[in-house]
Structure formats: structure tokens, C-alpha cells
Amino acid sequence: MRYAATIFAIALVCATSAFSSGAMGDAVGMTGAASADGNAAGNAAGGVVSAESTGDVPEVSGADSSFRFSHDNVFTVMGVVMTHHALRNSETLHNWPFFAVAAPAVSTTYKFEKDFGKTLTVKGDAMGSLTFMNTGVTAGVDLLLIHLLELGVHGAISSAWNYGETSTFMGVYDSEERNFDEDIFLTEASFSVIYKSSITIPLLAFLPKSNWTKIILKFSGSLENSVYTGADDGELWRAGADARVNGYRGELGASIMYMLPFKHFHMAMLTGKVSGFLHDGDFDEEFQDYDPDFKIFNITPMLMFKINEKWSGMAMAPIVRERKLSKSKYEAGEEYMLKRVGSQWRMNVLMCMFNRKF
Image 1 (cartoon, rainbow, N blue to C red):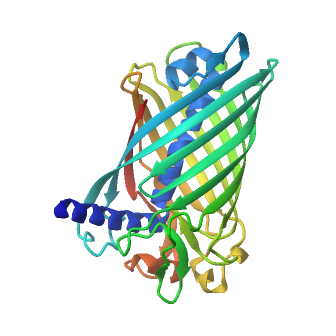
Image 2: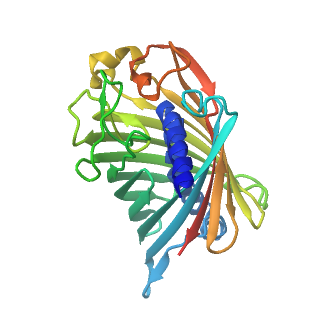
Image 3: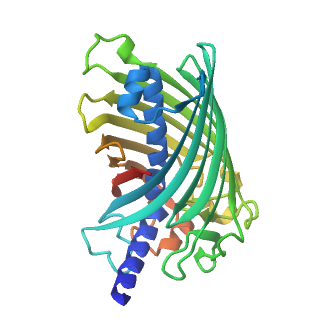
């Protein structure tokens, strides 16, 4: 038992070193985005493709086929392989070529869709999630025009756990100590409002009809305003995977989705995104050398698979353009006090998720 606890602690230390670069946070965030893109692909391709690709067709409520409702409980196991570069600042594993760790999560989601004629659909969803990092609730409403243009607003609240000196997932950054203070779970929380838009272009409508020509493009953008109850404006804080400040963060993205004609591997996807804080003035002066409004580019190939009616998943390999700092090796909490001297492309993690509906 003591040995198992030690191994888990080491895994959390490694995870923290990956989180500090932002690559892990982006990868975790993309799992939800990939699921949403999959549903968008299904909507654009029509009911048949939706059933084959996502396996998530809301149930018809009563005799009104224009209203659909669904509820899913999902157990997730996320496997992460951290590369040598992601481990470079780990006190214990900096000489290892890679390190693998798995973590469980559970979520419950309620969705509804209501059609108003053939051109407008109103969609809503609410989700609660529990992971080894945090627990949170999100809810939102989207307007879908002719199954191509989507506009929405979502809200989220989250609070995270800390594991003592092993790993800190919630707290305000102390620039003198160069680490995050540990706020107690549920005594503080982060609140976010996300404004989203996207347009989906079903290339399959213009290509010869075939099982091999189901290709869909999606362009998206979002604007997120986040606030942490325990932080003043300008202070750096964490309430989950990545570090933030109170203020706005934007993201632009594009995805190409290819519906595969295979029983178990139903979709391949390539996603490109650029994201970052909109105003460096949202950060205190002591963080300016870090270049707070540096834009992170992310290119991620993904493969989505379905084992049976209950089990599905995805694999991804994010390639990230991140900051190149004045020191190549440093303590995890020291990162935000260093000076950005350039940029570099890295693959910090490989991820594979397995989801089971119950």
C-alpha cells in the first residue's frame, strides 16, 4: 500500500511538470472539443452519419419528433505518456525517456435539442464531472442554423484538489516562494463564461458519394472570461490543469474530419488551434518578462474509435508551439518568473482515452 502511494505521488509530480508548460492542459481540453466536433460532423453529414460516427443520437420525447432528449453517464480512463521533454524539470524522473500514467474520471451529461422548422435548432446541455484534478459543472445553450452555423454561450464553475507538496491544482501564485498557495477544495472556485461560434462545411456534399469521401471541415472561435474567487486582478491562479488570470482568453481553430468506413475506427481528425490571453495588462508587472499574451499554436492528429455499444475512445498526439524560456531546466513553479526568449515546437504528451457509458 505504501509503495502504491509512492508511485501515485511520483505520477502526480510528473503531471505537474507537464501541466506547467500548458501542453497537458490543452490536450485535456481538446478531449471535450473533439467530442463536440464529432457531434458537429454527425449533424452536418446527416442522421445516418451521426449514428455511425458518434453513437450519440438523442432520444425522441413522446410524439414530438422535433424535441430530443438524452442523458449519459460516462466513466473515463485517460492514459498519458509524457515525453522526456515534459519530464525535464521533474526532480525524480528528469533522466527518464518517458513516463506513463493513467487516471480515472466520471461525468454525467444531459442534452436536449428542439427543432424550429428545418433551419433552426436550439441545443442545450449540462454536465457534471469528477476527475483526480477537480470537479465542476458546465451548462450552455447553442443555436444551430441549417446544421452549419452554430452560436452559443456556456458557463462553468470548478473547484480543484491539492495533494500537499506533491502537486497543487488550486491556488494563487506566490512570486516570492515561486509556487502556488494551496486553497482548500470548495473554499474557492473558478467561474467562466464562454462565447462560442463555429461553421461546419460538409465537403461530402460536393464530392462523389462514397464511403471514402465523407470529409467535413469545421472552423471555430471562442472568447472566455474567467474569474477565480481567491485572486485579485493581475494575480496568477490555477483551478485545474493550466494557470490563468482574471480576464479574457481567446481561441481560433480549424478541423478536418474524415469519416472512416471501418467498424471500430470511425473518424480521423486533424485539428489546428491558436489560443492565448487577449491583454498582457491583465497580468501583474512581475509577469511581463514571461510574455503573458504569447499565443500558443496546437496541431493535433486524433483517431476516434468504438469498441462496442458501451466502450469508445480516442487517441491524440498534440504538437505545441510553446515559450522558449531563458532557462531550459527549472523548478515547476519558477516558469512564470522566467523571460521568454523565443518559441519552440514540442510534443510533450501522447494521450489515449477510453470511455464507457453506463
